[in-house]
Image (cartoon, rainbow over all chains, first blue to last red; front, side, top):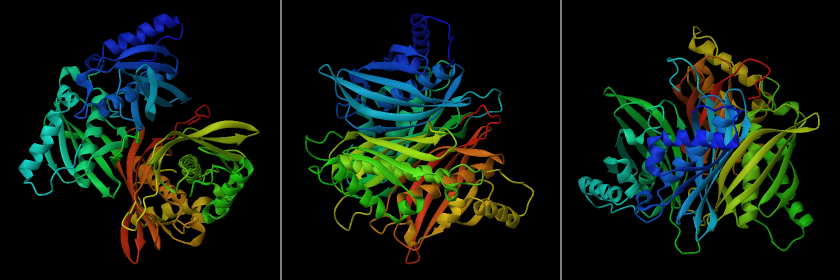
Amino acid sequence: MAGGDQQVSPDAFLAMGRGVIASQPFSVLVGAEMHQLSRGSIDLQVPITDKLKQQNGFVHGGVVSYLADNALTFAGGTAMAVPVVTSEFKINYVRPAIGERLIARAKAVHVGNSQAVCTCEIFVVQDGEEKLCALAQGTIARLQGGAAESQ
Amino acid sequence: MAGGDQQVSPDAFLAMGRGVIASQPFSVLVGAEMHQLSRGSIDLQVPITDKLKQQNGFVHGGVVSYLADNALTFAGGTAMAVPVVTSEFKINYVRPAIGERLIARAKAVHVGNSQAVCTCEIFVVQDGEEKLCALAQGTIARLQGGAAESQ
Amino acid sequence: MAGGDQQVSPDAFLAMGRGVIASQPFSVLVGAEMHQLSRGSIDLQVPITDKLKQQNGFVHGGVVSYLADNALTFAGGTAMAVPVVTSEFKINYVRPAIGERLIARAKAVHVGNSQAVCTCEIFVVQDGEEKLCALAQGTIARLQGGAAESQ
Amino acid sequence: MAGGDQQVSPDAFLAMGRGVIASQPFSVLVGAEMHQLSRGSIDLQVPITDKLKQQNGFVHGGVVSYLADNALTFAGGTAMAVPVVTSEFKINYVRPAIGERLIARAKAVHVGNSQAVCTCEIFVVQDGEEKLCALAQGTIARLQGGAAESQ
């Protein structure tokens, strides 16, 4: 994703981010909703529906890792304000995701010229209460120009 | 997932694994297909369709991380032959996923009493050729009994 | 390391932690100093000396990863208050370590019955100013009893 | 480290690598020995001595993570043949390091223009037998020119 214009209003910036989500078919399939977006910070949510579950009735870990991946990338991309790719991330699951909604909050912790290191906390909302569900940390890299680059 | 019976035939073991996939609504949503399963080893694939993509026409990183998560868990769960949960994993993306199909091959590298450490390679098939797309490594933990455990 | 007694005073708890560091020959070799220790939280430091450097005059990454490993383990071990082992961690380096001192601050973010997930920030002090140098996240596991366990 | 000349003989390439190790005071302190080095591949070892241990008599995890860090960096640096830095890595410990010697074998799994993704297996030699002790995966990045870059 591209980083976006620094001069736009907070509402316009969020609308820009929502436009990116709307243009990602997989995010639409999962049902992702962007609730906040600013330079280096995002709140990305997914209402829990049956189609997102695994055999035990919990949300599938792949949904949680999708959220981590996408939230980290927005945090890093908006922080660097250049086109980026997700280079890598790591996720620890600490609790089964059972409830009404997943909330991923990611932020850029260090922003360099070529990459940003970001962290993400993912909560599950159960009976209106947020509980930590997973923790992620990863690297968002500036997209290298040129067709020769395979990253 | 449960580990499954060690005494069953290879075909029955694969059928058991396919049954687990079929019982995971999110795996059905993504379109996952199990092509091989044995103790500590799996080949899990996803045919690439438009709904799995992001805004650039590549497969969304969240699909790739879903595949890594699920393949690692099957590798660890079948290796330990007990009910397990995915504790954590790390993924490096090395190439945009463009092509016809994703193939995740995971194996258990070390199996202990309480956890297995597994690795996974994810390839994208493009014009019939497999290209490495991502690399993952993670921990699959034996499910602790008792409601007090929040892991 | 064992978790330690919950009833002791803060000073006695810190003294207990310093005793563990003093009993780790590698920590003595590196020159680690414990500046704070409480349940699930630690400040572990290393004064930078020439023997800790690599060929460019920076502190070797291995020193930084040692600090992350040890700080994460103390954070998790004191949080769980049982004997633990470091199961795994991930570290992102964000800045070359140039300066007078390294400071690792780790905390337990989630504590379960069988493991704790901890995060760690590592700073380098340069001309009296702290700068983020690395970021780590990992799992500290309860030590399983019995000789059969190879973890 | 710089990548080195592609035209040199295997012996000269190994000698170059050993020269880098000898110029790293921390590697000398730990006692690292390079046993093999080629483009994208390394065997780096550490004889186990008492000063490398923790309070239980095992080798300190920080020594194992040092080995992973350094071996990954040599694998990536020689594969890219440009000056590099270690961007990040992840390590899973699977067995306490008890024995005579640690052996880290790392290789570059994917080499791009701006980074290489590498994996590393670390074994402990006990009574002459190699046992897997830890597993690592990480990113080695091309060093960006210019003082403005803080990575």
